[in-house]
Image (tube, rainbow, N blue to C red; front, side):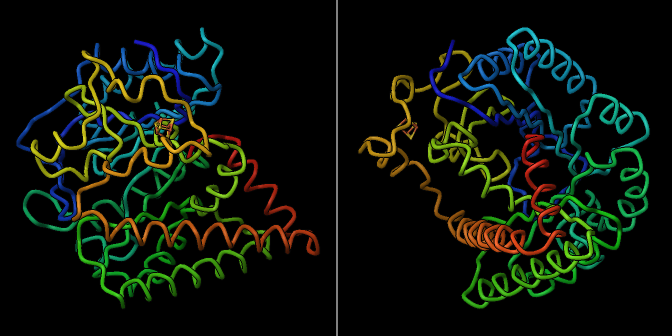
Length: 360
Ligand code: SF4
């Protein structure tokens, strides 16, 4: 199967298995799903052969480190395929961090893989969502592992900071805890599937702006922090087809089905049926096989009209949109400041360099 549209980022949800029971994750762990090496390979082949030179493969789950050997096999084949086809491939692995150890961290550092862990800063916020099977929070356990992660992974260490509406008022404090721990590369995500009230949005907006003002103060002192959503600004400039969902939202679930929804957002098999757009055996739905991104086409304008129909996920999407818009405005401000202040000029250069690495 070949594909006509550019896929810049492709995600493989490796497994439904996980060593944690986070309260905001909808994955049905009882499904015991795990992608086969053959399916993963075939999907990576389609992805790498798709138009476009820059490719980002993200492996996540469930918890991918439960199947480290499989991750290793997929990564080494993917790099070989990319080399043969002369594509610039970067790979990132997203994990809850609990299973990271010397061997997995060294492997990722040696292979220039970006390693992301989900961590929410303070003890209360981390333990609010992220729990072991026993219900015990993961903060203490993970916090003790983070210094080693940072020292091995260095600039390839990344943290995913998920903001839950019930913890949004502590968002800035939690962010500062991540900085205290030594994270420099931070992605803010918004928890989907839970009620975001008017006041939560207001606090999210306020805290996003305060976080950005903190980052800019640090930049003025040449202490550079990368807020991953800043890079959306550069992406929109580079990719005229960024409205096409295949560019960044395409992924394969462990059973080999394709979707434009993130795997952890889908509650059960009946929801999955509604969002699947093909699978590795039968291919991608016909209607997506011939169309090409065109900003002026009615087809593209209506492309996803009836696709994102899982209502319980809408609220998180709005917060996510706010995050992205506030971040893009911040970059405009950085560009403005860079015309007058050398330190901001250097910060802007740093952001562009990070964007070019292609990890997001
Ligand atoms: S209709 Fe347009 S936006 Fe939709 S998948 Fe096709 S090219 Fe992309």
